[in-house]
Length: 362
Image 1 (cartoon, rainbow, N blue to C red):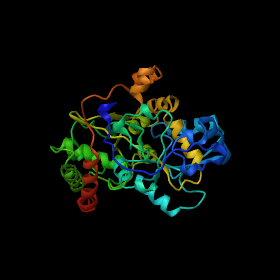
Image 2: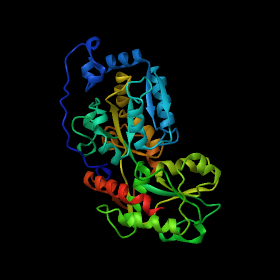
Image 3: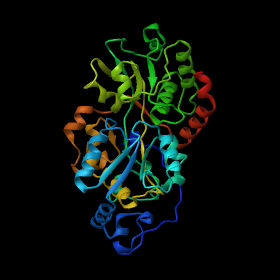
Image 4: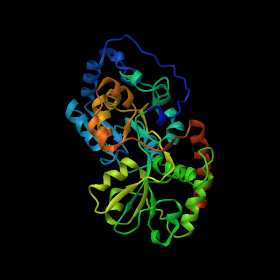
């Protein structure tokens, strides 16, 4: 999994574990299950809260529907899933708007650029199998940790358009008014990654996203780019016939949309992890920490594989014999020249997109 690893950020935190019994624990300050007196005590505290607020987790995104349902069944905790189709930036905006309310998000699942800019919103926490997460895939104190990745792919309606084999193909008249992104690249991780892919496919590197911005500007000038945020609904209706999105999202549509196919362009393959974090303002702080324990367990990590994503603990699970080999065989290995932006590259790209994206697509 080191091939897909995102660079770690060096941050500091003054939080530390305590030896207090579970009944005396301030769940919002707990940095590990040990602070509660162990995982069983954490489960008890989370069940006493009874609810968990998640946000921006579509059921068909990396198998989150099954993951949420299993968490509810396993722990008898109601999962309130709000605004499944919003962007990473909108997750943080929701945390601001709902701060102090019972409906505020307990946890985040964020693209890299937004996560790096939002660490003040996070509470440090290290799951029991923290050692199974490679060092390069986590912030040392537990403010965030990578959870799953895929490759940036192109999904397309084979009943309406030909298979694209290069970026240049998408500039042709066959793709008029057809090409869309999953969100705005200044706010959404999937769209950010699409511009990154276009950059490395268009003669550039991850040090400078300018070639990617220029490609989408040219695509827009040709009348082929449409400013529609992709959802399962826009794909099913035929509104978005060609979609830049993570492989697990595009693959999820193959079984439900007639003619939907997925391709990865030859050459550089763009990968990037999403990031888990607990809200420092979580209204259900124990349930938020139990959610993290669950997500990084082999049980939930294997559900990511079933959903077409590659979980961050895959190496540790393979070594321990707990990986779902059948599911892994189904999605196959990530092939090609894998490229993933570093922290510095992500921050530079985010600043460049904030400056130039709106003007580039008119």
